Image (tube, rainbow, N blue to C red; front, side):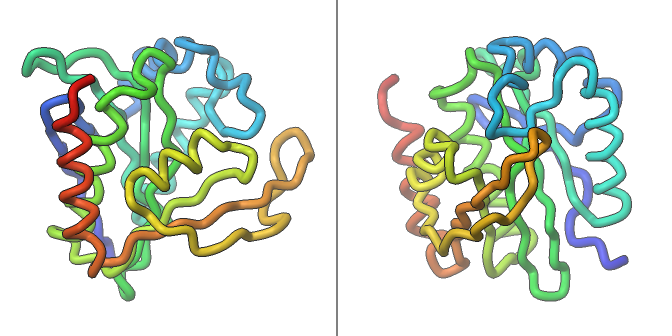
Length: 201
């Protein structure tokens, strides 16, 4: 397998991304419990009972398909703080230099903060400037209006909707909304994300 992404720590003023490890299990359990995120039917946040298997599956995807799952750690006054969520680079196409960013969730206390904006800035900068990707994709459930709005605020453009794209654990069928940012758009998106991080909160 040709691997596009190697393990890396990405650091910013508000957040730090660390490669996922089984040692993060207790911290991820605490983050998911902040808001009991597994109860959101249109997402795939692991419950306390399924978290260990979820981490194993994410690590298997890293080894077998070239994905790179991260935990998201809040940065407080320049120092690493608690783990507040997770995100992932996956669906990696090393030949055509494309990937998807997703499997993202945050503890309720970290939502609508600078953490998500900076995480996306760090991931996109790594994808476009270090990995030389030509496109980065985002996908979400049609019913996840909060996620759709957040992706659009990044500067991503909606490509379309995949109808009945996936079967959800509860048996419902997911319509998947597809967004992307292409390499020529990255300088504008980068300036926009920096601007958003500079806004008072």
